Image (cartoon, rainbow, N blue to C red; front, side, top):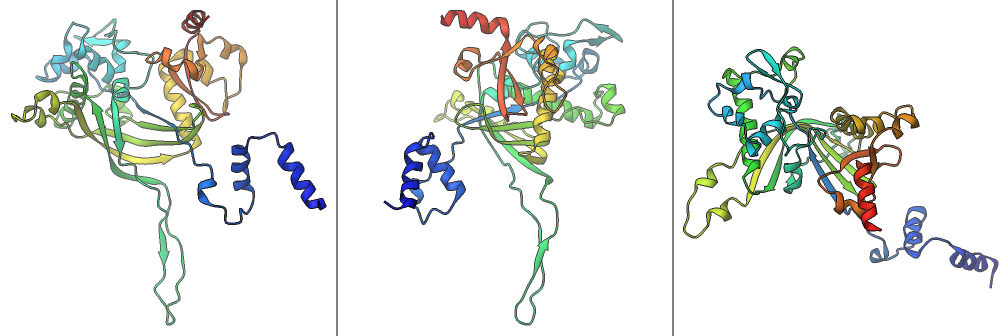
Length: 358
């Protein structure tokens, strides 16, 4: 055995990594000598999460009580109408205004006021499409005498133009999604038409739109935590509602079959991909709604860590193996150092579940 063969034999027998890991690292390191493609490990984009951020509509009593359609949200029952009202107007949890006086606020047991996301849209999402591809603009010169040409970049790669996201949601009992989008679009139309509907004063002063949402889309690795890709819209708002199909009639198709899904279009502006600062914006959105999450977020990268303040939070990270036990109760936070999307719950809730496991 030659010296080279002896070295190769030692490498192959003493390696501590698995054959799959070695196969992957080899592909990154050097020339494979025309190795067959079927021997190469494939990419594992395993799990996807989509989040729709709540808008900030002004659905206070004084603002909508004389509007013939929006006034139906003023019900006293804690049902689907109050759910929609509190989802579209997070301010109501803290205060409402009636006859010029602040009230104690409007709450719904169906809405988590510490979460910035419209969970009913997230949880019932069947498909989302329409994300634009980044394309680098180029300039190519006219051909010369010998057909010679040259070229160079002639613009930015970032996407700031408008596009449409198509989302398809599974319709569920009580039809909350149809009502939510209906009230959302009715409010936008009412503000435009000056139907005695106006945004909250701070939005008027700051010249901000209160009806926008932002769509976050995460693709995770097979471990259920590591972020492989992230996409988000700069700003989006719904522009259609498939109301007409509910009233179509056919003996061959039942009404239930006609209303199984809801297809909505979101007019969107700007598409951002795999940018660190937008992962930070996701965390800041969570922190703005949840004070306990803020203790963790503001005591990690890129901020100066303060372990004592971070440890004062009543939130604790949920292991991936326990996600199914805490679904509908978890709070997402991105670890910007490890680049993972983690979920948290109240530590008392986790400890109770762990005791059950024992």
